[in-house]
Image (spheres, rainbow, N blue to C red):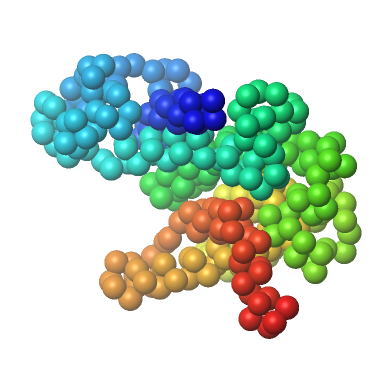
Length: 301
C-alpha cells in the first residue's frame, strides 16, 4: 500500500511539474505568477518553431527522452528545465510526506492506509505545497531576478497555517519538534512557545534583511528577498531562520565566488539570492539537527 501510494503521488507530481513548466516559461515579470487562463491556456507548442505538440509529445519525462531532447519538427534542443522540473515535482510529492512522517515520527503504515489523524495529512500537504513554491521561486528568480509577490504571500499564508496546526496539536508532539534542529533550539530560545518562536522568527528574519537593504542601499538584496525572509521567518521560526540565513550566505558566497573565479560572472554582476536562501532552508529542514550535532561535536558538546 505504501509503495503504491508513493508511486501514484510521484505520477501526480510529474503531471503537475508539466504545469509548472508552462507557468514559469510563459511568466512575465509584470504579470502575476498565478496567471489567468488566457495566459497559460492554449495548446502547448515548441518555442522555436511554434509546432503544436501532440499528446505523445506531452508525456512527463517520457516524451523528453523519447524525442532525445529535441523538437520532433525542427530538431532544436529542448530545455533541460522540462524533465528536471517534472522530476523534482514528482519527487516532492513522493518524498516530502515520507520525510515529514520520519521527522515527526508518524507511522507510514498508518499514514498511507489513511487512518492517521487529520492534522498529519494537513502538515504533509502544507510542506508539499511549500516545496512546490520553493521550486517556482528558484526558476523565476533565476530567469527574471524577481520573486513574485504571489509566491511570497502564499508561502507566508502556508507558514501561518503550519504554525496554527502545530500550536493546536503541540501536546501530542515531543518538545521542540516544531524546530528542525530539535533540542538544540533550547540553546538559542528564551521561550518554549511555538507561536512566540515563530513570531520572533518573522521579525528577526525580516528585519535583518531590511537592515541589509538599508546598509547596501538596495544593491545587495532586493525587496523580494526581504519579503521572502519575512515569510520564511514565519515558517521556520526562531532559531531555525538564523541557521538558514547563515547557510544561505555561505552557499551564496561560495557559488558566487566560484563564478567570479572562473570568469562566469563579474564581481558587480547581479546574482539571484532566492536560490541560495531556499538551499539554506532545505539544508535546515533535512539536515538541521545533523549540522548542529556536527558543529557542537567539534567542541566536545
